[in-house]
Image 1 (tube, rainbow, N blue to C red):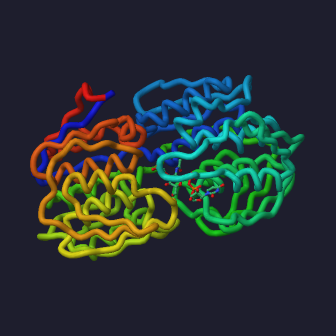
Image 2 (tube, helix red, strand yellow):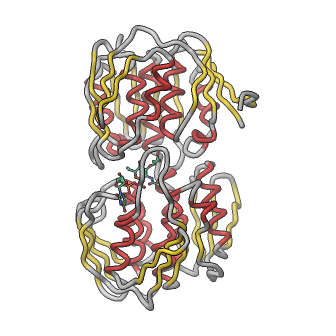
Image 3 (cartoon, helix red, strand yellow):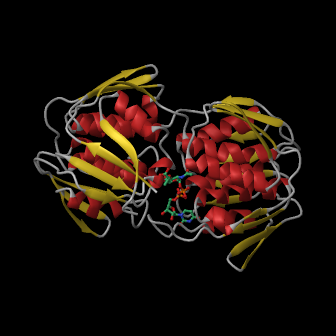
Length: 421
Ligand code: EPZ
């Protein structure tokens, strides 16, 4: 196991590039199964979740070629297996995204139920409800979803709640179904729109992505294309909050401000100076941090994937604020670790009350999930003394070369072998 060792106190200054978006790359990689042609992606981030998705695709018989850094050729000439096994799904619940493509192309899929994770139960009932509406039979056997269909047919359905991968799974399933599918109460995240854009370039007929209602007219086949993956808005926002918490001045290059509008509004309310260019965003500290309430909501609301990092920032706020997590039921695992660093945070149901303190102090802390680990890194960058963040494999799921990027901005951070674990 590895840990991150951080000596806090250096303001981050400079420019950093943002990598390709993990939450766009994952659905795009499995979407390659919707054609027998070769798909080529550029700006594929080097992350654990990408590695896991490659393992899953290889398991299904898909051919992969990492022909150069950040690029990936995928050719699903034939699917030789239809199972997403427990050992892969339990490490990455986004593996359930193979359901849509496998059902669209093969009419069969055996996918391990993901089970809960650190941030909540995260069921996939909406994914299954949609596939059943499209004519699939769904059985649960030995912890596996066994889905079968002769050929999916178009259907109309409304999601009970906004689900990102649920919207993505059913959109992919509908591309090759017979007839028209209308999905209502869809997720509007930029990664959903990116997937629809790529599917349409492959020959799909999708309308309305990015709005609540998406219409998909099924077609007979899709073709291979070349695509550069969109920038990772969550990584971009994380680096901007690192600038804010350390009193620094950082420009994140290659990110789209419109994808993080609600975060930038919040940072501006908190007293940060924001400068927006065509393909970059700059955040400069302007003295202290003003405590400002936040509530997470589906896009375009304040992203749940920013909540933990924002809480670290508010731990050093000038008064008290309330941070409410409306998307997941248990996404406060970082709170106790921040408290160990001197933060003053109390939880009541889905709301955390954060009373700003003057200083945080370095400590041994433990990462529990991807964005919680990012929150601890940010707190450590601002804390007095040395912090050791254990179980950084959580961090490696979604942040490419984070210690290199933060070091280039002046952070005192290094990865080390973790003798403690
Ligand atoms: C996606 O997860 C992201 N992952 C998550 O990012 C992100 O936090 C989440 O969307 C919300 O924005 C990927 O895109 C790979 P949901 P997803 O389905 O699709 C409930 C990260 O840090 N729900 O939108 O799994 C669910 O329990 C990760 O990069 C059902 O009840 O999330 C949750 O409370 C973490 N039944 C809410 O909806 C369902 O069938 C939103 O979940 C589906 C979802």
